[in-house]
Length: 204
Image 1 (cartoon, helix red, strand yellow):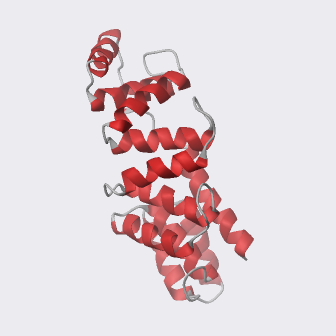
Image 2: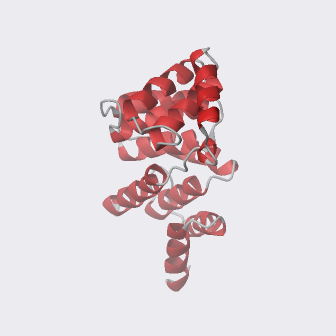
C-alpha cells in the first residue's frame, strides 16, 4: 500500500511537472514584445526576468534555451518572485538547464511556499511525501497539502486523499479520503475522479 500511495503521489507530481502551462507571453509573441521584455529584464525588473525565463524555457519568441531560462529565473528568484522560484525549482527537479538537484528544488519551493503560493506548497509537500531532497515526513506533507487545498489546489486535495486512504501520518479514514478525492475530481483532476469511483464502488 505504501508503494501504491507513493506511486499515486508521483503521478500527481508528474502531472504538474509534465504539463506546466506555457507562459502567457507565448501568445502573439512578436519581436517587439521579446525585445521589450528582455530590455526590462536586463534593467533588473524581476517580473520581466521571470517572463524572459519562461520565453527561453518554452521557446516563445526565442530559441529554446534551458540554460538561459535558468539564468533569468535565478535572477528573478533572488528578488523573491515566487513564480520564478517554482520554475527554477522544477528545472532542478528535471535537470533542465541546471544539474538535477532535489535539495535545491526543495529550498526554492520552500521560499515560494512561505509566500503562500499553493503550487509551491503542493510541490514541497510532494517532495516530503516521496523523500526527494528532504527526509520523508508525512506530517509536513499533510500540513503543506492542507494549505494548498485551502486555496483550491486539486493536486493537493488528491494527495490528501491518498494520505487518508493509506493512513500515512494520519489515522486511516476512507470517508475523508473520499471527500478529498471528490474535491479534486470536482476541479477536473482525472486521477481524483478515478479514485472517487473506486471508493464508491467499494461501498465507501
